[in-house]
Image (cartoon, rainbow, N blue to C red; front, side, top):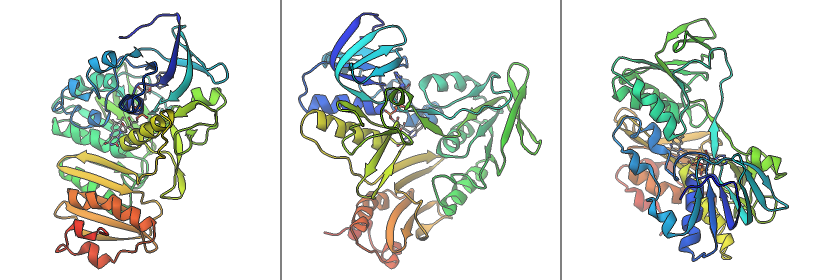
Length: 417
Ligand SMILES: Cc1cc2nc3c(=O)[nH]c(=O)nc-3n(C[C@H](O)[C@H](O)[C@H](O)COP(=O)(O)OP(=O)(O)OC[C@H]3O[C@@H](n4cnc5c(N)ncnc54)[C@H](O)[C@@H]3O)c2cc1C
């Protein structure tokens, strides 16, 4: 299945990057009856797998590695997909319609789909070359860090975003002593409003995680292995291991070098078409329009990768269906399941259903009178209804806060029939 041949390959569809968006594109092409040749090229050693469990159940050891893979091995052979793993695409020529790989292999194609995802943001500070400092993006990252997750080991997580907090929770569940260092004044500051930040901050404190906010990490100290993290006020936080969770950057350089339009990601339309004919892109690496929200977005989420993969396949199949969805996300930390629909960045007011103290609530965020986002913790019914509510709100429907907060009314009853 995997090959490192340096010969010239030719295919109808070349898919660059073997992750979530790539797999969805292939699955949708195949279920839509596509019978041309497909070559999938990925620079990791693995067939496409899901990343969300990496910082959650795979990290705390309650999710087997085999369950990460999006399709069984035989899917690729059965569907005649030519898979090249451990193979990095280093050049894309959109005029010649060819790819060059790091191992010298060349591939020509009729259409290409760029699904290169994103990579962890680097932290170029003194000491970052020390051992036991880990990124969290791949199976390989987890397998490298997990042996260090021992009872009483000291771990510093740099970054209090979703991935940092999930990592903190998973490690804490294994008895690791965890300190989260966050540069902003509150955790989750980039993605949510203060109320939810406060809830998760307290949740982690209650579980024994230490959180330091408003602090920049200025360096790492140690001989071979890291032994402490230095903060900008001079504080030394002892560490046997460090996990970096300071955000991601889209892998758009290949596309940029090929002359495609880039603007915080590879610019695509609602069908995943880039600025060059026959070159598509999907997933974390893209910047796409969202007609429901009336603006462009770059999203880092599984639903986005799936929906864009479907849109790309639909266009290749000649039955285009544009991507237009209310964004949604989730995060699991300790016993709290957070599900978010919509984006809260434009919100200026909110109302609460349930209570923070009970650990079961939904926050409804409004921009003016328009419902734009729902953050639900251990409230699946509210979350289920919320995407439809936000879609209807975008079309002009206004919701009374009394209706949303009345626990006697079931979430289903909110929906227009
Ligand atoms: C730890 C973690 C937890 C997450 N949790 C959630 C969650 O709870 N909910 C959620 O919705 N999302 C979550 N995400 C985000 C989600 O996993 C991503 O949004 C999704 O994987 C994006 O899919 P993609 O196909 O765009 O990129 P990826 O799945 O990252 O795949 C891209 C692949 O392309 C490869 N590649 C890059 N450049 C090249 C090249 N030049 N040649 C060959 N191959 C290349 C990359 O190495 C990678 O294997 C999480 C991510 C991480 C890392």
